[in-house]
Picture 1 (cartoon, helix red, strand yellow):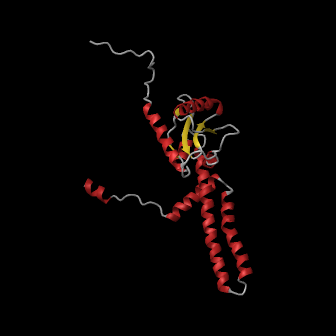
Picture 2 (cartoon, rainbow, N blue to C red):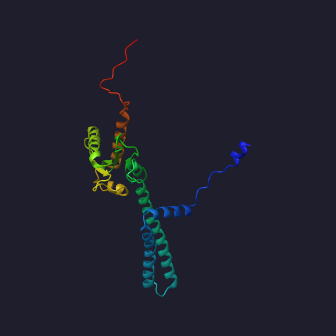
Picture 3 (spheres, rainbow, N blue to C red):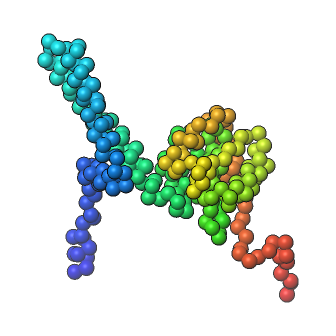
Length: 237
């Protein structure tokens, strides 16, 4: 009887593409009231431009005017989807902004080509949950502090010294994501990282990333409450 029930059970059907787009649209509209107007403008603007250009260039050619209108509609749909994607991404970031691990989620999903990073931080404060993330790209090594600058600045400096010990000739840059006025908004983090001056080639990016990964593997965790300076070897029985 149990086998019959398990075999007859079917996996839940995933929503179709149009239903997924509608769900994304609804989520975006809830978090950004202006998104609908931007999407309408993105759809209407190409059609209006196509009508004007088509009327000027193909006034006496109805078939040519129809082609311009079709091109405008296709351009409007494409631009609508682009705006929807950008607005939906920003709305998704607004839901996790300020939470521990938000920077790691951005580095995992939205990092541009040519950059390598991990969603796991390289340093974490157990008391405040402030964290430091590390990314490597053509702009060098970028250390990203997650939390107030007053608490993460020392963590960033400690990580910079660690990187400088094994990679003294590689540029190390700072970015801050947190409540401070001069911090980088979460949704602008990938674009801000791309603005650093190019200092590494693609081959050097992978070499530096591998070197830093090996640095992390060589560091063994110390059990909580154990002082390594006072640890003694066990006495022989």
